[in-house]
Image 1 (cartoon, helix red, strand yellow):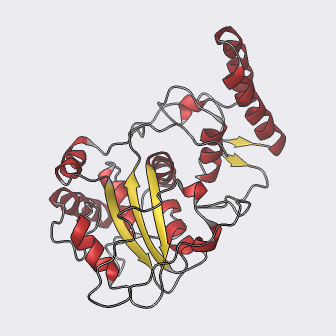
Image 2 (cartoon, helix red, strand yellow):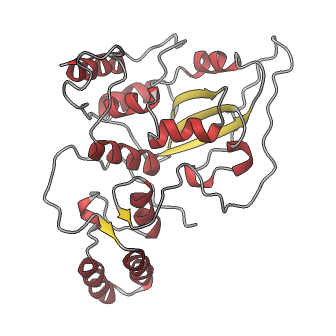
Length: 287
C-alpha cells in the first residue's frame, strides 16, 4: 500500500457546490483507481487528458480537499471515511486484515517503581500500517502529528511550547486496540478524543441535538463534518500502539510526562483553549 502524501490542515468549514458525485459502482471505482495510477506515471501533457477522464467518470478530488495532487490512497481514504460510497463496499476501519503478521510489541510494567516509557522510542505508523496482532490485544496508544502536519494556529502554538508532536495518549482496557481506535479515529461510536479533535479543528456540533438528553456532554457533528474530521485524522496522524494487560496505571504516568494537549483527565498542564472550545460545543449542542 502506498504511503499517502503528508500535508497540514486541509479541512475547510465552508460548503461548496459539488462538481462530481459521492456514489460510484465497483466498476467505476476500479476505473478511477486505474486512471489515477496512469496519471501519476504520465507526462504533464498526458495528465491533463487523464484528469478529464477521471472527471468524466464523476470524481472531482477538489470536492473533498484543497490539497494539490492526489493518489490512489487519497481516493481509498475518502471511501474508508464514508465521504465516497461504493456499491457493496463496507469500510474496514483502522487497519486492513490483509497485512502481513508481525511479532507483537509487548510491554510489561515490572514493578510499581519502574517508570518505563513505551512511546519514547516508539514505532509510530499510519493507521493503515498498524500491526494486526497488536490491534487484537488490549493496550496503550499514542497519537501524534505527522512531521509536516499542524493544528490550527492557537493550538499549534501550545504544542510548540511543549516541544512535542504528541497530542493524545489513551488506553484500550476491556476492549481491543482495534475497537478503541476505530471509536476514536473512525467514529464507529462516540469517543472523547474525536469530540476534542473536532472542536480543535473548529467544527461545531449539530445545534440543539442534546436538548433534553440526560448526557449533555456527548455532542456529535453532522455526518458531513464527521467525514471531514475522519479524513483529517487519516491524513495528519500517526499512531504508536503497545500490548498491555493488567496494570494500566502507566497511562497516568505518561500523560503527566507528555501533557498532551488533547488529554484532560490527569493532565497537570490542561489546555485552556480546549476547555473553552469543548464548552462552546456543548452549549451549541444543548441549544
